[in-house]
Each structure stands twice: as C-alpha cells, then as structure tokens.
Image (spheres, one colour):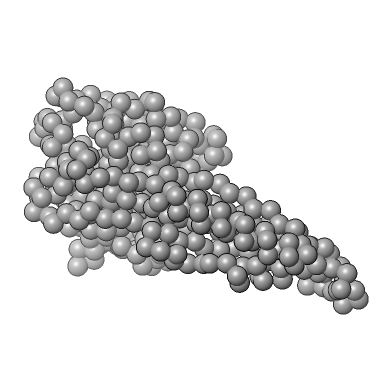
Length: 371
C-alpha cells in the first residue's frame, strides 16, 4: 500500500530543505505548494511575525467522507543546528543518515513525510476518512514557541496525535512533564581585583557557593532540575558585579514542580543574602504536563491501530515536552507517537525506511479506527 520510493524521496526532499528554528520558510513554502496543487487550502498564522521568524504555523483542513468527529495530526517544521546544507544518504542497510556533518532532520520531518504519504494513499485508494486537520508548527525546538502562538479555537478536533517521539512506532506517550524555566540573577559589587578586592562582592563566587548547596539532576522518578548556563563579570581584573544563571525544573506532577521550583528559588535567595549579595529569581512556566489515562479514547484508538498492524504497543512516560503538551493544554486530548528517529539532535541521527513505512501505516490505521 505504501509507495516506499515516493515516501523516501519525499522525506529526502524535506530534510534537504533547510528549516532551522526561525527559518522554516523553505519547508513552509514546499507544504503550501504541495497542498494547493491538491486543491487544499493552507492557512498560515502570524506566529512567524510574532516570533520574528520567516514562517508561521500552517493549518490544512480536509473535509471528511464520513460523518465522524474530526481528527488532528501535528508535526513541527523546524530543526536544531547544525541543520543547514543537509545531504541525506540511503544506505544498503535501509537506513537514512546525513553525510555526517549535520543532523538529518528526521525530527520531525519523518512525521511530515509520513502524513503526506498517508494522504496520497487516501486519495489513490479513495479511503473513507473523518474530517482531518493537519497542523505544522514552527520553532518547536525553541520551547514549543510556534504551538504557543497558535489559536486553537480554529480547530474542531477533540482528539489529536503528534508524531514526535524518538521511540519505535507503537510507542504511545501518555505522560510527560510540565516545565519551568528559571533565571537566577546575582548582584554583587564591582571593585579592582588587584588593588582593593575587599571592597567588592564577587557575584560569580556567590552564585557558585549558592549553587553548591542546591539540588541538581534527578530529584525523583518524575522530577528533575538543571543549571544550564552561567554568565557574568566584566573583565578578569574586576570583581564581578553581576552573574546570571539559567536553568530549569521539570516534573510530571504539577505539585512537585511547584515544590521544587519554590525550594530552588528560596534556597538560592537565602544563600546569596547570607553571603552579602542580592538575588532575584525569575520563573517562566513553559508548558503543562500530559497525564492521559489508558482507557481514554485517544489512547485506545492508537492501541487498536498498533495492534492491527502487528505491533506490540507500549504506553510510555517521557521527560521531555512536545507540541502535544500545548495541544493538551488547549483542551484537546493528544498523545505523542513514536516514529523511530534515533540519535536526534546529533550528527549521528538516523531513521530506518521500515520505520518510515510503519509511521504511514500507523497514521492510516488510526484514521481507519476513526471512521
């Protein structure tokens, strides 16, 4: 049923169109042309303008052939760096890799290719389907920024599937964390480092001493925190008057996220003030948790579809966010599906042709279960 050659060529064409976050216009233009050639309307929002990028989110609505509730599928157009000048190579082992100095971009263009191939098959075989909504987002890799800008009142679907998990097809992610972005700002006092250092308060030193007393890494099986970047100071011979640290906290429990964030904030401020400095902590809630129950229809439909294909489906929890987090937060029940991409965000990224084919078959099976 799946036209493997067409699917692979479509995937290669997608990944070889650069689309690092904020510069998705090549893939956006490709998708607009693709759907318009098939007499389908493509709606583009103003997310690109708001985010100062080159493309907005794209929405395609397809009328159903049966009177059933509509169904949403979503994937993101952007990639991480190094994602420019990608050259895809198909090996004799049926694995698609990059030439080695860039990512491949299967995150998340494998999903886009699979959705387009599924639509080709639906048309060729005149398969019955409910109303379909395809959402292609921008700047997902920058913190789900495109999805956050999307107006979900434009959708009719109440059930959705994002295809953006790096596990094998048949993996159904029903739990993922909420996340806070945390910025720590330490104010010290500048002084000459050689002539009168005792008159200064070194903000970098204070920050280091405070961080040494704070938890970092895995807190429990649902909760993590991390300090990711640190910057500060004016010159090597000046006692640093300011230091900024950026970090995060995540948990699949909102209560635990609130607790660890509060603890991190209070502990940091208290330690800095004890040492004679001043501290400020800024907290930005990035996205909500996903906590779906196995008996929910969105989950059961994916389970039935996977089993119909001979897969052994696995209900999974993850430590990362995806557009599914934002879609669920908008009141649409949404799972994230495994697509088989491996070593994502590295130059060792790859995906197998067999997994690409299975992704298409899984999309079609879910649609069939929805008719």
